[in-house]
Image (cartoon, rainbow, N blue to C red; front, side):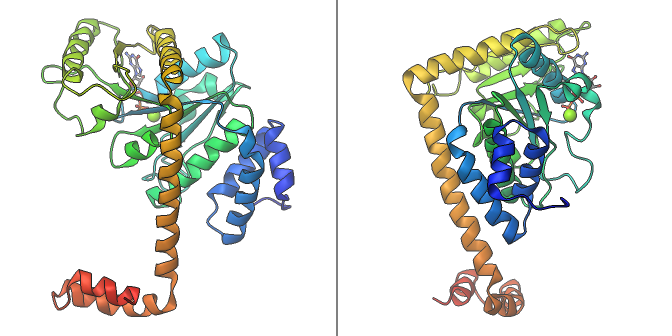
Length: 326
Ligand SMILES: Nc1nc2c(ncn2[C@@H]2O[C@H](COP(=O)(O)OP(=O)(O)O)[C@@H](O)[C@H]2O)c(=O)[nH]1
Ligand SMILES: [Mg+2]
């Protein structure tokens, strides 16, 4: 807990000045579930809003062990050192318990990035529900943009629903994959390949190159089965080795090509507009739900009604209508 409480103007000024301590504290504020903190957080966000939206937002997903952290270190160092840009790395990991276990908690896989003055790394909030984590991450992303970070990575693990959430936060969604022996297409979660703007075969090194190239052909063939995207973009399959440093600059080049192409045809802007609307409706749903469950009448009657529904004495629909007072 901060010893003194900043005003909204103080938080905003610190964030806009690119002060890392102020940025961290502002993110802690948006992660807070206290109503008074949330009101203050919304004031801060409203103040910095004109200074947001200019970053390239990159989503990164893949199963544990695929090499996300190592890749983030490699691409991140390319961004801060070769390109001289300010980077922020955020994570969406609703499964991580408070105070540890977060996918970004282990900064040992990104030691140079974690120590770099132009990189800001923030682990996933763990407010419990995916909805809460998603909101906090989206707001953290806006704060990072306001603090002058020109590139934002949002990492998530390739399990559960968090990929869909991150897809709704970013301009480009990158799926990291291992070259397996044989049927590479097994074990892929349904729908995830359709969401990807590019596939990256990781660890294409140390004798794994042939398998990686074969995996690339197979994934390319699989991707050709999907209908063409509204963006006019065909998701490529790239080979990388974060350890050997190969394919990393090519990933960045691809992102720039995507940005140029979709900003020219308007898809970039349209995707962000759609995301804004999704967030609006999600916010409404969340607010309505928490208001409903917070009603004393609902809290009192819910256990008995749940029991009646579970016992088959009442239909779920009738139960919902009764609680809603319809
Ligand atoms: N050979 C090789 N190993 C890698 C590469 N990238 C990551 N690894 C290893 O794969 C393991 C998992 O990597 P990590 O980045 O922690 O994966 P994450 O769980 O997806 O974040 C670690 O032992 C890494 O050293 C790579 O490019 N080449
Ligand atoms: Mg990791």
